[in-house]
Image 1 (cartoon, protein in one colour):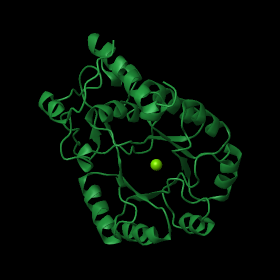
Image 2 (cartoon, helix red, strand yellow):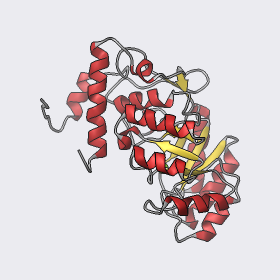
Image 3 (cartoon, protein in one colour):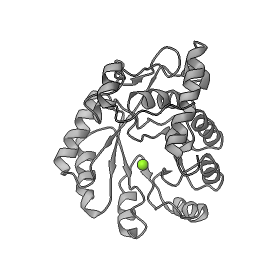
Length: 275
Ligand SMILES: [Mg+2]
């Protein structure tokens, strides 16, 4: 369905999940996942949050098991939060600018001097790969693209143009988990670091995307921490953390998680039967 990447991806994943369940096979085996748990980055929500609150969130996430922290920056007002978080935790800190730095070379330069783990999407989508490659060449900080990577083609083009140090692979945007796994493999084979980004997936989508994050090619921590960071009630049993704080890949056929009927009933707003 052109123009509806998330819906298209969800249907592709549902079909794959149904086929795997019918055959008693797990998604992690189907994709070739090599790890049983996955390190994660705590993405601190809330641009414009109070620095002290965000620092507290960061400390709590690291105590919970996060192996890195990512903070959103939309303007100079967010720099105090970046400083407070860097002060508060000993793990790597990344910044996601969500495309906000096109007109802010001063801010870009400041962030580039902080020794960040990486800088995600400094420029808005739509810049040419050559322009981004030239920017990357000027930066000391590893450059990651997210919103620019709207399709598997875009991932391939960005990597081949030398426009990225790392790519955020999002199954919901790239056509589903199989397409995302293929994009991850291409990027890693061509020298880019890869991690699985998140789009507020609930348990089902999170379990499926985790199978991609557990590929050997996805070497950087995924943005997919426990869904309890975002919602009070999930539609599946929650994903759990192992003793090292990694998110454990669900076992069992398909993606390894099923909707809880009572929760599903409580949150259903409409029903559509697809033939
Ligand atoms: Mg992002």
